[in-house]
Image 1: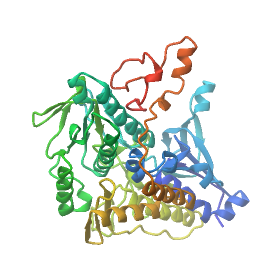
Image 2: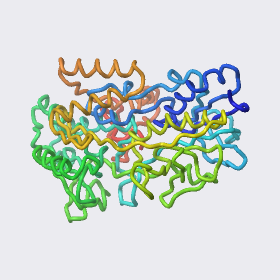
Image 3: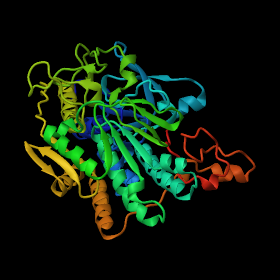
Length: 473
């Protein structure tokens, strides 16, 4: 039994936020039933995105709705608020909350009191002041961006197939990915695989007509799978005629021309930015201690240092790695986030009941990455795998980790059906601007961007909008 009534505020609905709230539902089941505790989850989206499946969603192997988990379904005993926490005053135990309702009411953000705080807002894309990046870059962190990128790639193939301008055709078939981590390499591998398959349905676009370029500022890619597997990945990508540029930076993408630090220039209509993440801006709007890198300074018990009743894990938290020695921190990845979330919830329950806290200790077991259908690399428990075995392990591992039996069954069914039938190659970019057709019929001007945000021009006919580039603009 808890010592006193507790209002628990969970900020964020990602890995840590969802798994923490899910575990708290179980640990505080009786207290929730008696009204001795309440759990509030504040999140911008009503779902949790399982990000390792984004590359396969972009390639069409998984339906977008099966990459996300609806929070209200899995958290029936929590109050889920769609909105954003913009500031936290932990000294007063209040958080500033902005929701769609507060915007409609015109009353401004309101104060949300709490007793226990879990900060898990995640991270945001780390960008650089590169000319043209804000106008032409496409991210790859959300399911909307993944599906928008798929639509965009197929749209570029449509443009290349129908144009008589060789310069336009060359730019449409040039795809530049910046960042050699998991997101960049897996997205590039899956989309190149999909596009190569799709060319069989075009009479004048061949796989050799497309240019796929991976730009990485360091001297290696996929550092998580080890140096040997990183070198193999470079060889595998180059064998597929993918241009891998190591120790190279993107210096500009203005005017639809990607300019690299080695002097290369590539006219392109596609620049995908996956060059890392940074802590969520919310952390700077709190009165909690931060590290030099802007993450919350935490103890091995996942409590925020010097701030009783404040907890954090995942990308937002700098958690000491007790398995790696003094001064080391756990990597901000899903493997640690999911495990930290469970322990964090346990420690909140222990704290409320006056019980001793547990210490987070998990040795990193390795990583797996997909490079397209039946291709992958893995470094798990010191063993190195490549090709089909690594790809199979990638799928098996993530199928076991995706939340809820419902999602596991649906994803497995889709994989099974995709092995029996041909790939789907349909672009539904017009879904990004669903009112454009009606606006034109009603005599208004279509608000959609018919050629994607990279044009910066409005569509003349929404019926030709086969795929806007980037749904997030």
